[in-house]
Every structure is written in C-alpha cells, then in structure tokens.
Image (cartoon, rainbow, N blue to C red; front, side):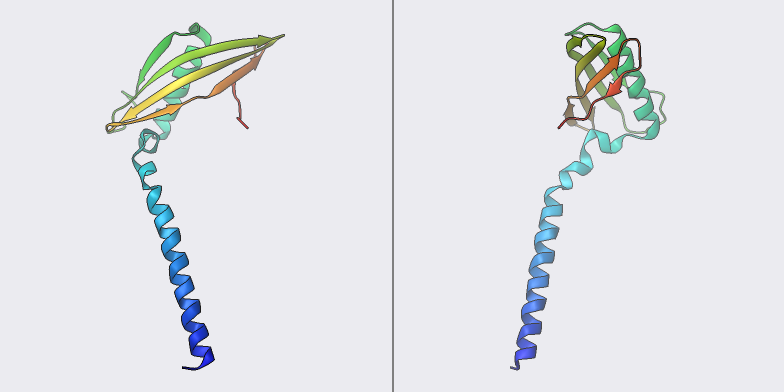
Amino acid sequence: MSMRTRALRQLTAAGLLLGAAIGAQAANLGFLNDTPISYMKERDVESIKQAVFAALDQKHDGESITWVNEGTRNSVKIDATITIASTSKEGERTCRDLGVVLNAKGQSMNLRPQFCKQGGGKWQLQKKN
C-alpha cells in the first residue's frame, strides 16, 4: 500500500471518528428536545412574562402564583409555578429572585431568574455570571 493511500485512509478514519464523537455528543443533548420550554410558542412566552411581572409586583417573598397557557392556542398544555424566593434592596435598586417550575408532557424544568429595577422603573432580567 502506498504512503498516499495509507495517509488517505488514516485521514478518513480520523474524520469518521470525529463525526461519530460529535454525533454522540449531540445525541446526549437530545433530552433538551422534550423540555417544557421547547413546546412554548410566542404567545406562551408573552403570557408567562405577564404572570412573572404580576408576581414581581404583587407577591411577597415565599408566595407563588400558578400560570397555565390556556388561551394561547398551543395544543400542548404548559403550566408553571412562579415563586418569589427573595427580595433585596440597595438604595433605590430592588432585586427579586424567582423560582419558576415549568411543566409540559410529563417533563419538569426549574429556572432561577433574577429581576431588578431602579426606583419605580421596569423590572429587568439580570444576566448571571
């Protein structure tokens, strides 16, 4: 076998192994396809945003509200429990940590967003480092 043929075979084998590894890694993330958030449509997102802002404005620490995507025209039933976990104030800045448990098709997903606002301003979702 010539050196060129051997090099080509090794390159092809390496490519196949790399492709298989990438495919296996992608397959391991397949569970994300069935998470509640994957079933949410734009109307669901807008509806749950309203529920989150209502909780931020109206609920005390430890209190929860329940959200259901009824009326959003999504054939998949999605519900959530939104709980105000804690509130902190520093001067005019108020921050609230939430616990959001989303449920759809037998799957559950826990989210822990934080929202802050300055004085009487609007709540802003905070990026976490």
